[in-house]
Each structure stands twice: as C-alpha cells, then as structure tokens.
Length: 329
Image (cartoon, rainbow, N blue to C red; front, side, top):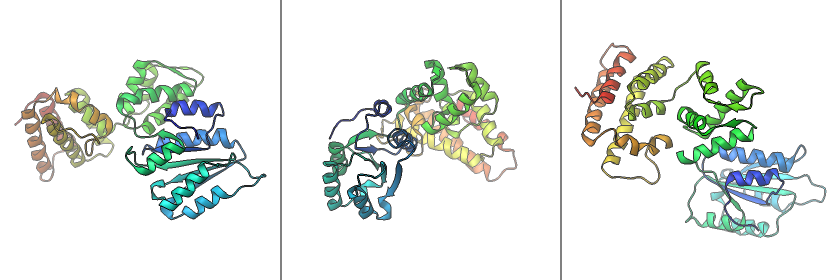
C-alpha cells in the first residue's frame, strides 16, 4: 500500500488523472474539505454508475462495514464507502480492516474519516501506515490563501494575490463561507475569466452581510469607522447588544492572557482561527492597562443594557469609540 501524506491539492490532481488509491484516511474536522474531497473522488471513481455508501460507526455498524468490504462479485459495480466515526472501531475490527487493506478490492474505494487529529494516536498511526492520509483540519490563516487560489483556479478563473487577500479579509471565517461567496461571484461574472477587486466591490454593493468576527477584527485593529459600520449592519440584521458585548469581552479576555505571555497551541476559546491568528497584531494596539480598562467598560455596558431604554446603536457606539480611541470613562 502506498504511504505518505501528500496535500489534498496534490491528491485532487491525482484523482483527476484517475490515479486513485484503494483507501484514504481523512484526519480533521473541516467539513467542507471532507465533502470536497469525497465529491471529487465520487465523480472520478464512480462516474455515473457506481454506488456511494455512508456508514457511521456511531450507529454501531462495524459488522456492516466489514461485511461490505468482504463482499465481492465479478459483476459488481464500483463502490465508494465513506466511513465516519472511525475512532469507534474495536481492536478486533481494526485487525480485520488491516487484513482487507493488505488485499483490497479494486472495485471498492474506502474513505475513513477521523474528526480528531493526533499524531500520537494509535489508530491514526495504523491508518497512516496502511492508507493514503489526508489532512482536512481547518486551515491556518496562512494556508487559507492557497485554498482560495486553488478553488478559484479549479473553476477556470484567474485571480491575483491582492484580490485573494481581500476575499479572505471579508469572508475568511471558514473555507465554506469563502467558497459560497466565490460561487456567487462566478455567477455574477458569467463568461468573464478574471476576478478582481472591482468585482468584489460589486458583490458587496449587491448585498453585504457582516459577521461578528469581522467586528472583532475591526476593533482589534482600532479601526473606528469600520467598527461602527459593521456594528450598525449587525444590529440592523438582528444581532443583539448582549451578543456583541459577550464577543468583545471574549476577545479582550483572550487578548489579556496573550499579553501576559499565555499561549494556547490548540486555539483560543470562543475565537475563530482568523481572530486567534491576529492576536499578536492586536496586542501591539493595546497595552495591558488598556485591555483591563476595556474589560471594565464592557462590564459597565453589560449592566447598562439591562437597565436602559437607549437604542442598541446608541448603546454600542460609545463603547466602540472608547475602545478604539482609548477613552475610558
């Protein structure tokens, strides 16, 4: 069995060339990457006539999995078997699985999905040594650019690095969100093959939805005008002041830990990867005293929301001004 850890992009290219392995193991919890890989595999391996089966070992279907793998007919159609919750596989079932992998059926392609990624895990080591392993963890912000470029170019469009950066700034809280916006943009451009900043601006003017993480980012950068614009849009679209205060508080609590030298290798609780990845940048905008003052302002704001008739924008705007301008009263 071939071994190694090629990138998902490299594997997609191999699949497009019909270089398809008997078994793949997907490690990570980025559902879009999981589905993207499986769909590409189904298209090229099954064509129009094959069968795709989904088995979740969470449903105690280990016997079904092993029976499907052992069933073989000279006249059977190709099968793509996708197995989730693979970590629930028993020790005995693992042995049977390895036996199958050492003598696999050419008409069957097996995809084993493990949501957790841990190089120390015995099952992961076993699968890596017997299948082609695929990293489908949520990409770090530095890797998001490669993914956007890959997806856009796979659709036969051209895009420059600057426009990719703008797309990520606007929609990069997850790959799925970026891809959703790319789909809208490609519908807009039609037969045009170049995606540039002017097209992105047209998409924005056609209807823009902001996300709370973008407000966190604007505040972390002390961008007052952008922060007010995003806050106003969020409020108009139904986001409540308590939610905004909670998200601000979470950002500055994590920023306080960061400023004190505390680092979390597994990510910062309640922050998406873009915000977590930017904590170092935000920490240069706020010293520890400013962070502590901001948390006090947010605490007062939380109490004020429960005892005032002020409009939501009238409540949150002074808070944002206080944070971005460094005015603490």
